[in-house]
Amino acid sequence: MNPRQLEYFRQKLLRWRQDLLREAGYTLASLSEGGIAEPDLTDRASVETDRALELRTRDRARKLIAKIDQALERIENGTYGYCEETGEPIGLKRLEARPIATLSIEAQERHERMERIHRDD
Image 1 (cartoon, rainbow, N blue to C red):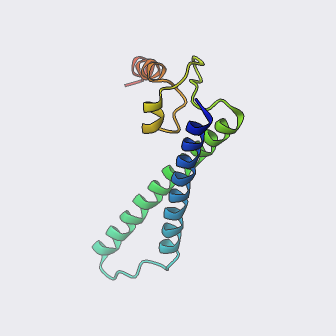
Image 2: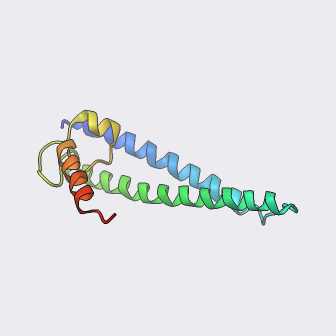
């Protein structure tokens, strides 16, 4: 991957990270506005369900931010864009679709097949 492509992905990852952090800030602000003031039990349950869903979403975003940070670190140390399993380059189309990818499509498919085979049903 050439330096221009690396910079493109670095900027893409930084923007994605910034968007996630901004959304987390909005969530924190909305959650800190106070308690649930709904007098109706059904309305209160609905608000609590919405808050729980938002917290789960924020937890997934937190994990995604960690993966973005790892991808940015790989850019810095020169390993970004290479499959962790095979060492082969990860295709640009795959990185465009999933810039945090650590496996090539082939390695990811093998990994998913193994998960299905060894999954406890």
